[in-house]
Every structure is written in C-alpha cells, then in structure tokens.
Length: 397
Image 1 (cartoon, rainbow, N blue to C red):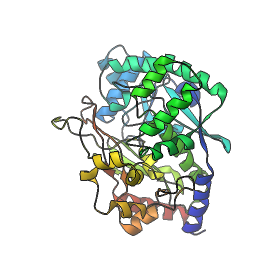
Image 2: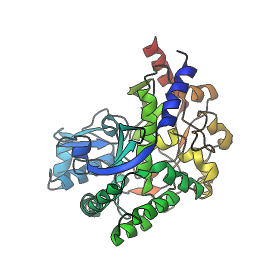
Image 3: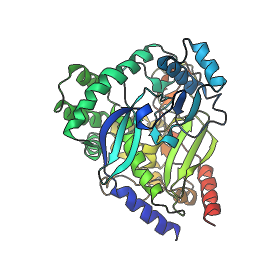
Image 4: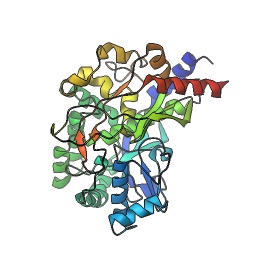
C-alpha cells in the first residue's frame, strides 16, 4: 500500500474517535502500575537511574508521597540504585505534562472513545492552582496538593460520572471559540467544563479550584489527542507516516509514527523559548520535557495560534517567519469537527517541506529547583523526521 493510502486510512480512524471523559482512577488500578514504579514523560531515559534534574525532583517527591522514602536523600538513593524504576508513561498509555511523574497513588483522568469504549487513554488529574508536580521542583507544598487531588478532588469528581461521561469535543470547541489554542491556553474550555460540572455536583471548593485553574482542561485534552492518534497506530498501516507522539524527557526529544508506533526515534533535545514569568529569573530552561506535544501533533496548540490572539501575541517574538502558512503545510487536511485548524502532523510532509514543526510547551528550570519559568515554543528538528521515515522504510521493506 502506498503511504498516501495508508495515511488516508489511518486518518479516517482518527476522525472516527469521539473522546469522552468517563472517570478518574488511581494509576495502580487504571494501568496496573506496580509498587516502586514511576512514570515520566517522553521516550525512555538512556539510564533511568539518572533522569533529568526536573524529573528527578518530581520523582523524589513521589517517593516521599508514596512513603517509600523518608527524606530526599533516601529517595535519590533509591532511584540511583534502581530500587525505584522510572519508565516511559506512554508505554502504559499514560500522557503526563512537563516533569510530572506518576506514582501508584496518582489519580489519572480516564478518556474513552464513544465509538469504541474499549479504547482508553490516561493523563494526570490536575491539582489546582499553586505549586505543581509538573513544574519539576522540590517545593514540599506539592505533597499537600497531591494529597488533596487524590482524596477530596478525586472523590468529588468520581460522583459526577454517575450522570454519564463528558463530551470533550464540545468543551474543546467552546475553548477554541473563546480564543484557546488548547495547549498554552485552555481558559475557555476549562470554563465550559466548570459549568458542566457545576450542573452535576454542588461543591464550592472544587468550583473555586476550577475558577482559579484555567489550564485544568489541558491534561484532559492531552488524553483526548492521544486517544485520537492511537487510532492511527491501531489502523495497522506500516506505511503510515502520521506522527502519533512528540515528547521530551528533559534530555532527548522523540517521535513515534503510526507505521511503527512502538519505536521511538530520538535526538538531543533543545529547550523551548518564550516569554518568562520573571524576565530577571537567571535559571536556564530545561531541554524539552513533557508529553503535551501530542496536542500540537494532533493539530491544536501551536497549530491553533492563528485563532488564539492572546497566546499568539505572547509568542510573537518567538514565532518563525511565515508560520501561519508554513506550519499548515506539514499537517494533513483538517479534522471534520475542527475545520479551521490543520490536521495531524505528517513526517513525510515535514521532510518534503523542510519545515520544523512547532509545539507550545512551557519552560521549566533545568536545575530541578526553579520550577515554572514561563510559556514556551519548541520547534522539532526536521532531521528527526528524516530518521523516522528512513526507519519506517526499512521496516516496511
């Protein structure tokens, strides 16, 4: 089968998916995450005993949270000696933002396909405003947020699904109509979600948290995009050049193609660039960290900036010349439900056009201490897609 035909079939599977938020569940139950195992974003580490500094900081906090260690130094030793294993979250069907690490107690959001209920994707349940595990710091206040997320918030949200799942396309469209790009900004989508949840449950603390957390929708949309792109992989077309993952672990950036979905193709990662919260903050930004590039690969995020004035203005100084037209050239035709936007990122088009695809992924401190530095824009090197295509050709031969 020709690549064009393989991509057409794979894309039709993507377009058939209707993602719905259908539940919340601890990782130990949702994906059978065993004890002393932690999940991180991006491709596997070359040496999981020596993860990037922000991921190490989050892993240390998770070791304390799980009760595996009683102090930071103890947790660091457990990771360095391999007593605690760090594995790629995507190998479990989980997507995790920035430097966030998933432990067995971590509550995940469960997103299922209305047209194929057996298909599932998972991501981190947000924990509200304030210090966050995804920022990759050693702020001990994060432990309190994790405890609140996995007890009170998870319990309240669990009761809402007795009324049925929530349609994520409708919430995403509400966000786009409000000026969201669904990655750097999810304010409108979160507001629409807040309104739907308020009609199902009367809980002032949860409602207040949603009002103060405009990016709450982000991880839900990460799981939705992963569910859609996984359908391209499940189509079984070995010639398909559609990109089903774009992620970094703080050391290497990697992509996976629908034609060989289990194989990561990686290279050394650069740091995203963008406006800082504090322009005088001296900390260096970490190399690309996080699974949220899945959003941009699916045709949202940086691909939606033309319709998202606020983040587009914030990124103006960092956007490449001709980005409005050139970025669309490396994506397929639009999703029928989102006709204004480009479609799925296509490695073959990247190579043909020589355009570096963009992703709107935030900047965090490379030292594993500074935490969130600001919004970020990342451009993936075209040579990464050349190598992925070459590997696909070899596998198809």
